[in-house]
Image (tube, rainbow over all chains, first blue to last red; front, side, top):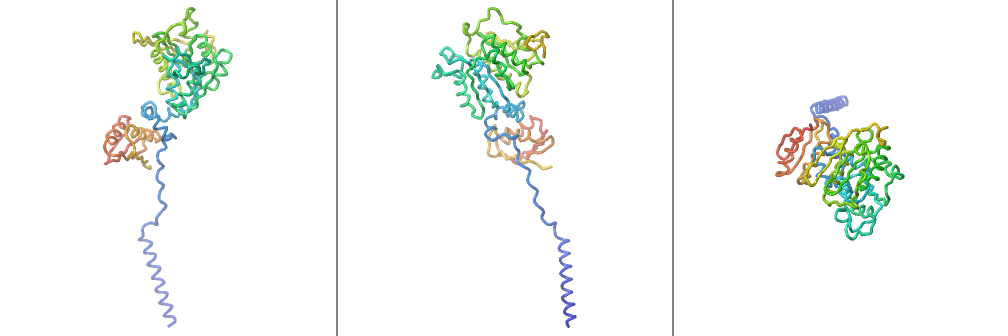
Length: 291
Length: 69
């Protein structure tokens, strides 16, 4: 009996094993760890707020994440805080430039306000660099805005442009333009030059050592050059030229389109003519001939 | 290859295509993105914008499958 009992237990034990092995064979694979869902798109590291703020430029086929990241890492110095600088600084800060320095030694005067759109009547007497910086910080708090109440001259030009990715010259004198051009050539810093007078203006991008510099195109200042202190300028004319400068700076920073280089754009706002004028590098240029 | 998914149902134009465009820029050519959107404006405009940008697009209900060019 005891044998029979053992035998019966053995039978059921073996039956149990057989059932188990059959069940294992028929059963679906044991559940595996579920595959992790692919991560959501990271939008190149742009935040929701950045995507919304810059949506209308990000949506452009030419722009996009790469251009936005490039401009967000750029250091740009704007020389002057006047009529040209207003659209330059406004558009660069609006577009999300990383850091914008803006320098001007002067205070806001009543005669500035018809064309210098970053300054308002309550700003009279305030340093122009500070007045501009205050508005720019309201426009885009994500941008580091650094005002400098200083005049750019040959002696301090190198120190002021050190570390800049692009300099935008919005000064109103040939002496300053030549000082900026020489310093940018020496340091290899890309530069956007411009000038406006009356209803005429010009814009020129410069890649030192690669394209004609300002002095290649204009070897000497005209002997009788008026400045806009003693000649007139209409506000919108300065706005057009400054806007073109802002666009050139954005092209240089991001490469989204070729800059106006190896020459300049001559703009006649009386006739509406935009003329692209060629200029070549000069081997004997004192500023870039040795580069 | 895993298909990425993007939900643009909370958004309206132009953010619908902006977010889709940026998501596509983060992918490699040939990668697929399933975009879930609301019927109406986005369902009309996002496929059109994606095709204009050169991507291959198929629409199934309110899901837009885009193969990145």
